[in-house]
Image 1 (spheres, rainbow, N blue to C red):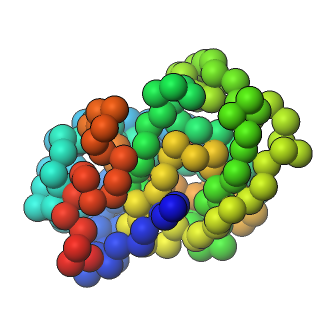
Image 2 (cartoon, rainbow, N blue to C red; image 1 turned 90 degrees about the vertical axis):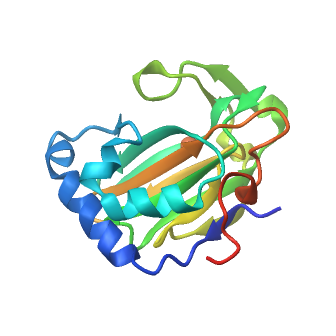
Image 3 (cartoon, rainbow, N blue to C red; image 1 turned 180 degrees about the vertical axis):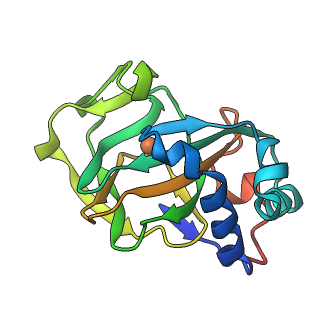
Length: 189
Ligand SMILES: [Fe+2]
């Protein structure tokens, strides 16, 4: 199984600069996450908007910025509930992502518990016993990267600066939207 796939987006440097400029105010509020509608990018990051518009195959369901403070972690979890997992995300790094990792873990099904464990009590499934986790993959999200979010995953930021990443989520059904190629034309990337 592929846990992630990095995309070669030619103008990524310019997209990142746009996103950094557009998020200065929110970053200063020290939120752990915030959402914007996809249309927000039309004015605030037109290069990203154009890139997504010209490659997407499925509607955008959610655009969420995730901020990990310095010397901090996002503990291993799955997105959604065990019986309705959010399958994948397109993660776009913006600030402080060098030397940080996203890690995936093997986890027995009976070692997960559903509840309102996410930020602002959104539904998420968390690990009961962390000693039962076995790391199975890791990467530095240093360019636009598709990631599996239905496998137990976490973030480590041991830098002295915060990390900011945008995650774009696409519509999915029980049978469609779990493969990276389902939601975007990525053959050329
Ligand atoms: Fe997650």
